[in-house]
Image 1 (tube, rainbow, N blue to C red):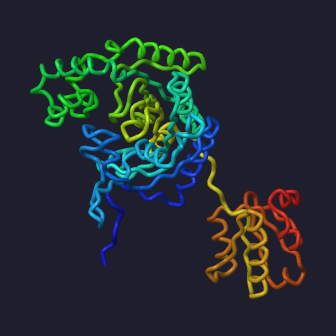
Image 2: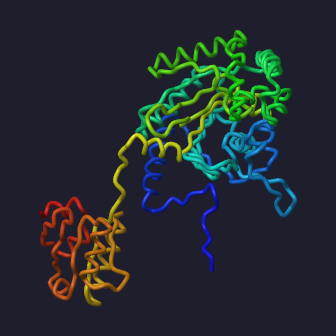
Image 3: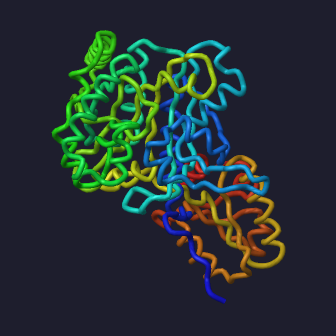
Length: 424
């Protein structure tokens, strides 16, 4: 029969590389925890309306990239393309906004977007996201940016640049939209069909279009900072002052708009500037109207998302060193039924203490067992046979240099690598 292979745009994470993911996830979890974030776990699929209302019908995500289907009850269901909208749904459904503010939550999850697979971008991808609700002050923006900067630094990425912008609020953005419409109407023939449709509904999305002709036209478009109201200017100035205060460098990039409709005021991206894997490694911003848009009371929000595949690709491009994968602490070679039973008892005791102990389950001879132990990178081995069972003692071998030491089997079962090392 023909083999079934993984779907296009998905990737298996094999045992030989999964330890890198585990390390990365552990560092990210510990980092965001230091800023007060607790984990939220969200369903893989939601009602399609959640994303069409929350993310925005004029975005590429909703218009082109969502995995949407009708379930057996005829309901329109979508695999989550991002994490913010469904986090808002969860906190509203469970009344978390009635608790102490701000509410801080993080997630490590897979998301799904139907787009052309490319390096660092898959149809099923994995993302760290943090969300903060209830804080409107610019200090919240600074802290969220600082959280992202700490995540990037702690995983070991060095060559990044923080790019910052403000895209205004409902009070000042309409005037900017009119300026964009006037400009893009002069270049209507140069816009793609999708952007022609966007022109009257949401001209801001044209600035984010990846079509070369639209991108070329967008280079001459008016810039949002010229249209900010007084409050937005003050907020943005305070954010920059806060970043200066804690020593996080940034550059202002007035072309950043982000790809989702819910963003307001502060938006930011961390862009990799080193050789190899170029591109955005983290993006986020403020979304002060999203909670109300999804049925809640007015409530400010801010957060970011970073793709794990992208982080790993950048780390590899920079030649970052990952901690070594875990290897067996002890492999117990054995010959004969009594030795096999003894090996299993010793191994069981060591595992109960959290050590990695292995015994033969393939019925191999002594030489193949030693060869297998060497392949696994086991730190120590011991050979058990009739003589060792009778004497209650065996030879412990340190695999790094071949040194051997005698050890009582009772001591072997009740100790660990730290005690074993003292024997050499």
